[in-house]
Image 1 (cartoon, rainbow, N blue to C red):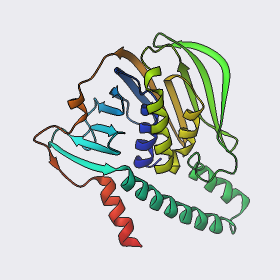
Image 2: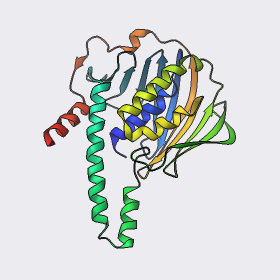
Image 3: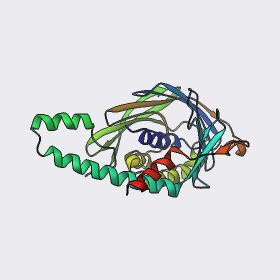
Image 4: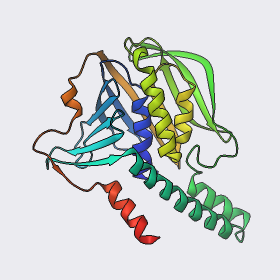
Amino acid sequence: MKPLGVTLVALCIAASAFSQGLVWQSKTEGAVKERMTENFAMPKMFKTVRSEDVKEGAIVIFRLDKELLWTLNPEKKTYSEMTFAEMEKLMSKAGGKMDAAMAKMEEQMKDMTPEQREMMQKMMGGKMPGAGSSKPTQVKNTGERKTISGYACTKFVVTDDEKDFMTLWVTRDVRGFEPLMADWKEFSKRMGAMNRFAKGAVDAYKNIEGFPIETTVSMMNTTVTTTVTKIERRSTPANEFQVPSGYTKVKSQLEDALEKMDDED
């Protein structure tokens, strides 16, 4: 899976835990380097801080009220900024280029033997959920239950184009989650508009009520599991969702990608 796709899907997963005055820790493992993340949520504001040695984007602040996100590099004391509109433009361009590349690949595959086509399809690992699926994303409550991190959870399976790509263990026992459910739904709606590659995940969250304690996503031959290990109901000061003083604004990796796409057109 491309880093940008991982980041946006991860943001989508993290945003599903929006609630009034919540702070929680999560562990991500699988086809990525194991990492711990601390998450902070207040009305229309979200911040995630990675604990491992990450330089660019070690801290991400998402402001639903300002329709933008900041990525911070504490080591260099720099930050970058991107609005929802800019991200939507980037993802639209990326989607168009991916469609063209997939169409070209499918055309080339017509001349391959059945064995070669099968091998190529395995290497490609399928497509991103929600991107051009012939059938809508479906969410199934399996009824299976178990306790994770001290919370009673119910298992949901999300299917895209008749293939399972996400499993969520969801609880309704997190106090403080309900008040900001509207924020979460608004965030999901905007994410779906900006990032069609994460649309499958966004569609899933629209139909699931509760806080996802454990989420496993499998796509593009990659499986990643994020587990919430601790949750506290605690308010975070508003200044924690601002760029700290003394930081210098720099161009983001997303802006560089957008400029390169513009140059190629």
